[in-house]
Image (cartoon, rainbow, N blue to C red; front, side):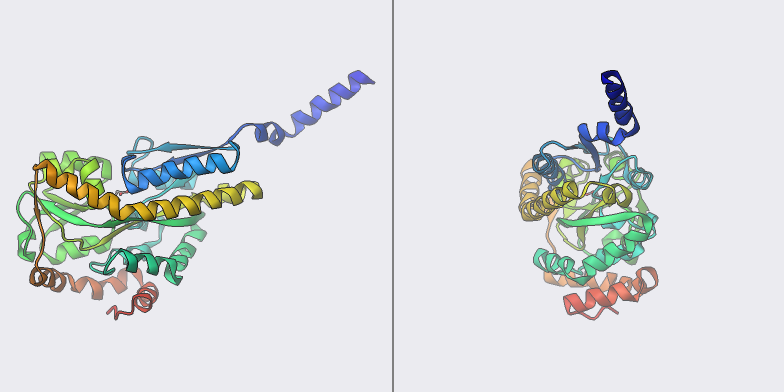
Length: 333
Ligand code: LMR
C-alpha cells in the first residue's frame, strides 16, 4: 500500500510539470539598447527590483542593457517569437510591427514641453496606440519618457540650410526621415549600437538624440557641434509578449503591474533631470560646441519642417492625428 502511494505521488508530480515549474522563478528577459545610466536603463533596473520584491522572488527579471542581447530590429522579432518577454523600444521603431501610427509622436515640435507630452500620453491617444499592438500579439504596459532630441554634425546647425547634403542617422521613423529631408539632408536608418562608429568613421555626418544618449554613447566626442534644438520628443513604450503576459498567474501579474506602475512613475520623474545633468556633463567635457537657437532661428526650422505635417496623414492616418490634435488643442493639417 505504502509503495503504491509513493508511486502514485511520484506519478502525479510527473504528470503535472507545472507543479515543478512553479517552484522555480518565472524569468522575464528585459532587453533594451541604451546604457544602464539613462532614464530607460534606470527604469528597467527599478522594475527588476520592484518586480522581484513584490512577487517574493517568484519572478526573476534579467535586464540586458546596451544591445547586449538584441539590436533594435532583432529585439522586436525576438519579442514576437517569445525569446524575450519585455522591451522598451522608442515608439519611432514600431513600423516593422505594423503600427506606423506611433510615428505621429515624432512630429517636430509637437509637444511644447515635457508636461504637455506627459498629459497627452495619459489621455485617450496613449491607450488608442496600445490597442494597435494587440492584434500583433503584443501588449503595451507603459510609456517612458526620455525628453527631447538635440541634433548634431561636424558643422554648426543653425539655419535649415545648414543641413543641406548631410547624411543623418535616424532610428526608424518615417516622420523623422521626412523632416530631415525637408531641410535638405539625407536620413539613414541605423541600429542604435552602430551609431558611434558610423559617426566616427563618417558613414553618417550627424544624428539626433537626447542628452542622456549623447553622453552615455559618447556621440558628443565624435560630433563637433550639437544644437540643443529639442525639435522632437523621444518616448518609449514598454511592451510584453501578450501570450506570456496573459499566461501568468493572476496574482503574479497584479504584482508585476504594480511594479511597472511604480517603475514608470520613477522613470518619468527622473527623465528631465537626467537629461539636464547629461547636457551639463557634455558641456563640461569641452569636446563639442553647444548651440541654442534664437526664436527666429527656431521659427525658420519649424517653417522648413512644416511640410511633414501635411505629409504625415498618408503615413500615420487621420485618426491618430485627430486624437493628438484634440489632446493638444492644435490643428494638425
Ligand atoms: C535610438 O535608437 O536613437 C533610440 O531610440 C535609442 C533609445 O532607445 O533611446
